[in-house]
Amino acid sequence: MSDPVPVALSRLALTDFRNYSAASVELGSRMVAFVGNNGAGKTNILEAISFLSAGRGLRRVTLGDIARADGAGGWAVSTVLDGEYGETRIGTGLTAGEAGRRVRIDGEEARSSEALLEYLRVLWLVPSMDGLFTGSASDRRKFLDRLVLSLNPSHGRSVASFEKALRQRNRLLSDGGTPEFLDAIEAQVAELGTAVALARSETVSLLSKTLDNQKQLGLPFPTAEIHLQGAFEAATIGLCASDREDCYRALLVEGRFRDRAAGRTLDGPHRSDLYVVHCEKQMPASQASTGEQKALLIGLVLAHADLTASISGMTPILLLDEVAAHLDPGRREALFTRLEALGGQVFMTGTDQTLFKDLPSGAQIFEVANGTISLC
Image 1 (tube, rainbow, N blue to C red):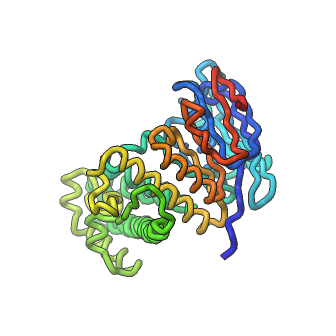
Image 2: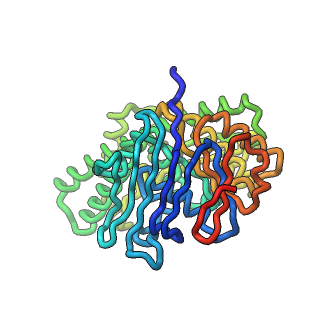
Image 3: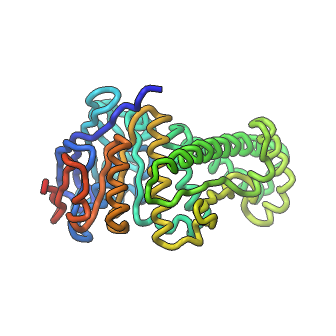
């Protein structure tokens, strides 16, 4: 297997994005850190980069809320990307009064943000994810779906279609739809739900193998053991795709009365959960200490970055918000060494420049203050 193609941003520009009226930065390294006081706008830069991928960005907010408070209501992010197709110019943003963001690639309008996955994959770890293991199953499903999306660009569309079909079934049940209509929509739910479940299962399986391989590196991070679990998984374990789809359709038919009373569909992949175990201690990640949970999450993200490079054939861009501040010096140095070995471009944030003193030579450190970005 050939080495993944290195992908990196060489220039980034923001217009009316959060606290930035107009800012641009020239990037000449694969290891980049932004330092500044809390509230200076460091995370806003990472969020802007996250919009160079499919979806709603790392904060998953309403697009209109991103526009600068004193601006015209729109915003824009643009970059020059060096990757598989040479130098590529990418722009995305929201025009005031429009509902969705636009994406342009080398001046041509793309049909959706999904087109960006052909050029780069963007992965992130942000403080809001620190409670992943103790939070809701819904949060873990969204986290898993982001992992799947970096390996399978059509997954986001499959999840959206599955959720839409579920809403249609719930509405039919509520309105007293005929058995014939319910048969039709349940066939869609079963087909789409099975596709979503199989994509998640495949990602969990591949990531588990990558985590096992990562053990051999001797990193000072606990190893995560991951499983996909739920009633749907238990009912369909060992079945091929077609049999799994038939089983799900039968579960839906059998559950109509119960689901009508509940006002929602109670069986299916939309109820599944990502179960994570601290491998060395053989305890659920939810019971580990706060520091161990953070370290487990870092290990998961590193393994996923490695897997993404292997499957997609391109090195991913990693966004790590305030990650260095939570690590002791030894783990921090080990993290930087591992990030360099992964070969992708990494953007980090921190309040103190000394957090990044162990970055490899050639790394860039920028100071962020008052809506400006300047090289230290």
